[in-house]
Length: 203
Image (tube, rainbow, N blue to C red; front, side):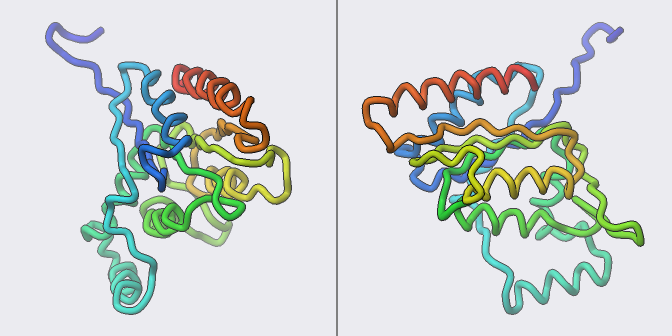
């Protein structure tokens, strides 16, 4: 039992917003439905990737990373995203269907959190995840119908990362086929929001 005055330690949810269209984004509406249903025992950190100084690996930026890894300087500020990602008890990603997967900005973020010794490690047996997260969650919207399609690569990629990073489980909520029949668009999005809220309640 907790002593009088002692407060419970909240679990950490890292919410990654990659909704490129921002307030016009249907994915953001889905994400907000999820966030509004997150239980109070969770502490939410919202990271809007569009506002972060994320750049692709090239030139001096890439060479700096390689030098830091060779020296084992994993406490360098440029690895802050990786440490934050690894320390989360759950990670939720909100990103639209984009060129068969998701926006490149999210891939750049993933490159930045993929750090040997922080989010995963290698040995003779292969790759092993180091993240403490119980769940990796994906919230997305799609104009066409891609559930179960070989052309849908965003959710499949993130599900593979679940094992790479060592998360306990994976789930995806997708509002599929939003642009196929305008009369059904709002209903599809509303139904996906219901599922997103249920997913949040199950954290």
